[in-house]
Image (tube, rainbow, N blue to C red):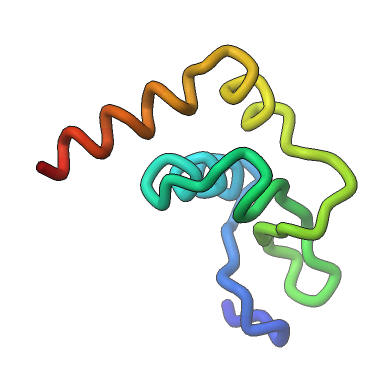
Length: 81
C-alpha cells in the first residue's frame, strides 16, 4: 500500500505507536521534539506519525513522566559505543 501523502504508513495503531516510541529512543529526541502522536489517515486507512498534534501520545507521555524514555535513550547511546 502506498499513501498519496508520501508518509510512511503503518498497518495498525499499535505498530505506529511502537515506531513513535522507537524514534524517540533511537533518534534521542527531547520530549518536545520529533513526532508526538499517531493518527489514522483518511487517504490510505493506514497510520502515520505526526509532530503537529494537540496532544502527546499517551504511551509516550507515560514513558517521559516515569523516566523510562530517558533511561532507554541512555542505554541506546551506551550500546552504540
